[in-house]
Every structure is written in C-alpha cells, then in structure tokens.
Image (cartoon, rainbow over all chains, first blue to last red; front, side):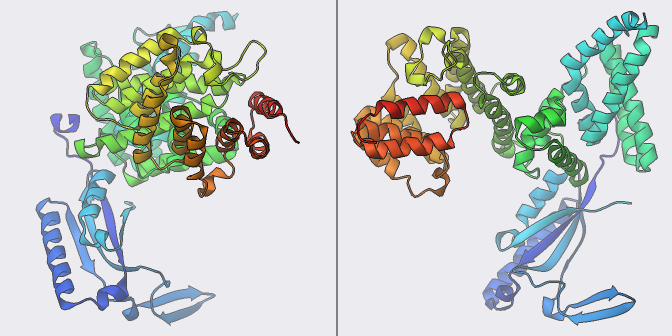
Length: 127
Length: 418
C-alpha cells in the first residue's frame, strides 16, 4: 500500500493464540489420533515460521499438573489444580506478529486446535 | 456585531461538515486506527475554524486546513499518551500524503467504505455496528442515535466508546477484505445500513423527525456503498429495497392519518422516479449472477408494485421468491409472508396451513404481524371466533396507534358472535 511506497516498515501487532480444548478427550485419544494431531501441529508451526510471523509457541502440560497461587491479606494460598474448572481447558499457545486482526484470525482458523475446541485471539499490551 | 462577522465563516464550516465530515473522520481513523481520537481531533479542528476563520478569512481549501489542524491535535494527544512512536510514524506519512494531494490538487482520498468495514467487522458486537456507522460516517451524536434505537443515551455512549476502543486495541484493519471474505463482510456492512433504515422505517408517517431522517441517511449510505462497489449485486439490491420502501412512504397514511395497507394503496401515490431507479438497480444486479437476500427482498417489492402497470401484484412470483428466501434466511417473517402469498395463489386455507407450520416458533408469540396475518386468513376461511382472538393478540402487540386503529376496524368488521 502507500506505506510501502514511501519505504516505511509496516506497523505490526503481537497476538496470543490461546488454544482451548477438551483435555480429557485429548488425553484419552487413540495413538493414531494423537499422531495425527502432532503431525498437524508440526505442519502448522512450519507454516507460521515460513510466513515470518512466528514469535513463540508451547504446549502446556495438563491442568492436573498445574498449581494456583493467590495472595490475600498477606497470606499466600497455594491450591492444587488450574485457576478455574472449565468445560474446555487451556492447552497451549502461539504468539505471532502480524499486521492486523484479520491476519491473526486467519492464522487462528488454520490452527489444528480450532477444529476441536476454540482459539482465543488476544492482542498483547505493548508498553 | 462580531456575530455578523462570524456568519460566513460559520456557514463555510458547516458546509464542509455537511459535505465532508465522514470523509475526514475516515481519513484520520484509517491511518491511526483511532476512531475516537479522530473524532475528537476533528471536533477541535472545527472549533478552531470557527475561532480563526472570521479574522483570518476562509482558507482556499477548507478540508485541507481542517485536516492539518486535526493531524496536529492527534500528534499532541499521542505525545500526551506517551505512545506516540507508532502514531507519529502514521501521522508523518499522512502529512506527506496531504501535501502531495494539495500539490496535485487531488481530493483527499475517500476511506468511508474502509471505515464502514471496520465498524461492521465480525469482532464488533452486531448491535453496535449500525450506531457506530451512523456516528462516525454521518456525524450523528450519541443521544440522537440512542433515541432512535430505544436505548438510554448513557448506555449508547458507553457502548460506542467500547466499540471504538476495540477497533484500536484489537487491531481491526481499515482495508477492503480479501476476495474470499468480501461477500460476508459486505453483508455485515449492508446489515448495519439496513438496521438503521428499519429503525427509521418504524415511523413511516415521519412524525418523529429523527426516525425519518434515519431512513434518508440509510439510503444515503446505501448509495455511497453502491457507488463504491458497483459490481456487488447485494449492495445494489439493498439500495433497490430501500428505494422501493421509500417510494411508498407517502401512500402508507391517508389524508386522515389512517394506516393504509399495501393492497389498498393507490399506485399514483407512489413515487414513480424512485421505483424506476430501484427497478434499474435490480436489473443491473440480476445480470451479475449472484442472488442474495437483499436482491430477493427487493424483487418481492418489485412484484408488488407491478400493480401500477398490470392492476395486480404478481403473487405467484412472490411465493417463489419467498421459497428462495426461506432457504437463505431462517426468519419467521419470511415464513409469514410466504403463507400470505400462498393464500393468494392457492386460497386462504392453504395459507393457514403454511402459517400453522410456523406455530412452534417461540419468536412468534410476541410478533404482531404473525397474529395479524393469522387473523386475516382465519377471517377469510370464515373462522370468525378464532379470527377475533387473533386480532385481539395483534392489537395488544401493536405500538403504532394508526395500525392499531386499522386492526380494530378489521376486527369490528367481523361481526358475528362476540
């Protein structure tokens, strides 16, 4: 567009793609299904990197391995388990750097998790 | 004394506002993604014009003057917010663009369509899209919009603030959508314009100035979109639909202010110029080979007003069009209108059967047109007691006094046992 004509680097924004899914379902899936998912995510990560928009990504261990910390009235409270019991659980994330929301949504739609649960797209708050 | 001196400047500023407000907001917002900031900066710029032009004279290109002032205000605001790095980059480029335009006497680019696409983006709550377009493109204030949409001004104001923040914070682009998304995104823009038109249309006598203006403004927006996207058949279809409805505005009330249903309207009372324009648009759209809901709804209108040439509505065509619409849209309104058409092509009993098929839809319990349609068909099959009950329901649900009177009259005409 006109930005390119004047030779200025296009402004981009960072987004988190938060992958939510049915954890129990994923943990009890067959070996074939798991293998397919791993392959799908591998291909997806490749694509994100090739497009030059990849910043970071990780899979999270299941919520049972999580621990929640709150500090109230000077007391530190430590509880076994995730922050909240939800129908779908946070399973992983991608952080991407793209020009606008439409680009982020397009990548979110292609993420394998989108077809099994939901991807929440959140912009980063850049200080 | 100073008031007289101010008058030419005021008139000049108002002329620019009337003609270009939306264009100026869109230009600034598209380059900064800050819709609220653009509106504030422009508002300050207009205030500066009213203070400055009386003494310094009206500038040769008022738009450019206002734009330059608004741009400086946005830079100042960005600096104050300390996130000026990105903003300054955009604003510097804007200045170069403005200077190039002034040098070649080019117009300031028209980004209103981009602004509308941003306002109607899927990430924006559907209920706030029409209000935001009305405010940013047409300059309506929040209170006016609130009263039209039956929401408190404070609530409307809050929702508008939130929606504009969402555009900025989520990075909603000011771009024409990709080919693959264009039809769907355009449908959202058209839906917002139609929502505004429908709000305006809910006061068909035009008794409430704000509501009547809303319909006119929606048509203006429809013309704008159709002119900017002339190869999009649904844009043409929506404009045709609105023009058809507008053409019959004068015929919806008789000289005593009583409601006149379409079937009883006098064709000479319709605006023939608007009808011809609508028909031409529909014809152009039909040649593009991509039928959609607005073209179909406009085609229904067309099949009704053919009465001005043939003496009666083309009910067979209307039934077929509603069959097609029913496949596109899941709305009880379509079903009701289809049943009415079937009553004309195959008799009221068949129409009633078609209406009965909708009875399970919970949305109809409070929907006046359903009960009015039901009452009419029951009356025609001679089921007067049931018809009376149905008229009772319809009357209880109708807000417009003229339509209520009409329904009460129809009920009284039933006669028979009370």
